[in-house]
Length: 80
Image 1 (spheres, rainbow, N blue to C red):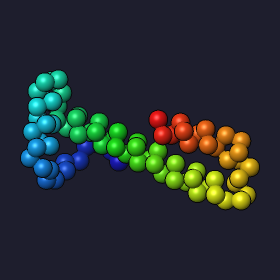
Image 2 (cartoon, rainbow, N blue to C red; image 1 turned 90 degrees about the horizontal axis):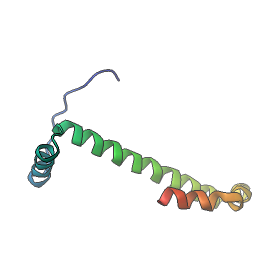
Image 3 (spheres, rainbow, N blue to C red; image 1 turned 180 degrees about the horizontal axis):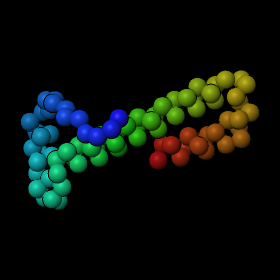
C-alpha cells in the first residue's frame, strides 16, 4: 500500500491522554507513537503465530525428529 491513509477511530480517553503526554514529552508526533505501537503489537502477534505453529508441529509424529533437533530451543527464543 502506497502513501498514508487517514484513519478515524475512537480510543479510550486515558489512552489518548497518554499518547498526547508522551508526544509532548519526547517531541514525537502522535501518529508516530501509534505507528510504532502497532508495529510492535503486530510483531508480537507474528511471534505468537510462529510459536503456535511450532507447538503444533512438535506434536506431529513426522515432525518429532525436527523438534528433537532444536525446535524446543527455537521456541524459547520466541518467548524472549
